[in-house]
Length: 365
Image 1 (cartoon, rainbow, N blue to C red):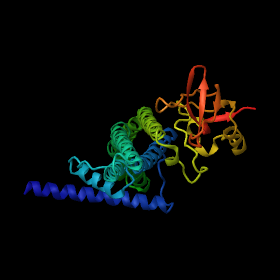
Image 2: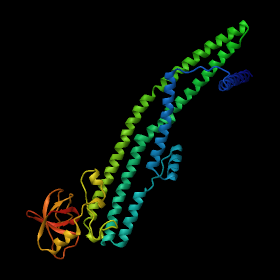
Image 3: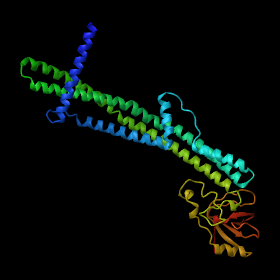
Image 4: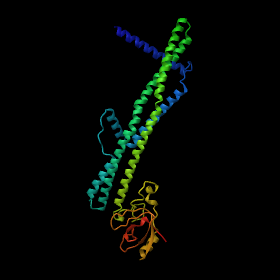
C-alpha cells in the first residue's frame, strides 16, 4: 500500500513537472514568458553537432548506395544486421557477367576466336567482381561502421543530454516566472529555494552537455582518418580494375586484327593494346583520339617496295615472336610485305625485325 502511495505521488509530481514545462514552452512561443538563452559557445557547439549529424547521415547513406546500388540487397543486409546475423554471400554483378561469358565461350568453343575471347573477358570480370567485394568489405569496416557508430551511439547520447538540458532550462524559467508572481513572503521564500535548485541543475546539465559536444572535434579527426582509409580502398580497387583491363586488352590484342575493329574505327584498324604503363590522362585517353597515319601515305608505302622512317606513338608489347615490341618516341624503319594484313607493317630496329600495328606509328617525311 505504501509503495502504491509512493508511485501515485511520483506520478503526480512527474505530471506536474510536465505540465509546468508545457506551459512555459507555450508561453515562450507566444512571447508571454522570458527564456534563458544558452551562452554563444554552447550554441555553436550544438549547431556544429547537428550539422555533423546531418552530413554524416547523408554521406553514409550515399556511400551505401555507391557500394550496393541494389535497394533490395541493402534492405536485406539491414534486416540481417538488426537480427545480428550474417547476410548470405551472394554473387555480384561483375561475377555473374563473368560466369555468363565463360559459359558462353565454353559453349561456342574455346578454340574459336570469339569463344576464347569470351572466356578471357569472363575471367577478368570475375577478378573485378572479387575486387569489388573487397572494396565493399574494406569500406564497410573502415568507413561506414565508424560513421554509423557516431550516429547510433555518440550522437544519440548528445541528443539525450541536449533534451535534458532543454527540460532543465524550462524548469529554471518556470521557477523564475513563479518567483515573479509570488506575493506572500512564505511563497517567495519557497520560490527562491526552487530557483536556486533549478539554476544549479541547469548549470550542471549545461556543463555535461558542453563536455560531450566538445568531443565533436575528435569525431571529425576520427572521421578524417576513416575517409583516408576509404580513399585508399577506392584507389586500390580502381588500380586493380585498370590493371585487369590492361592485361585483358593485351590478351585480346594477340587475336587477328580483323576481330578487333569496332564501330568507331576504320574497318580493320587494330585497337591499341596499351596506351601507357602509368595511370594518367594519356593512359585513359580513348582510342578515337589516336593519331593514325593518313590512308594516302599508307597506300603509297604498301604499293612501293621501299621503306620509310616512322615514329612510335605508344609503347607496344609484342604478343608473340612474329611481332616487334615498341617504345614510345623511338624511330624505326617500316616497310610493307606482300600478303601481310592491311593493319600491320614490318618494323625494323637494328637487327630486330617484326610486325608492328600501324595505329602505333606516325610516318615521317
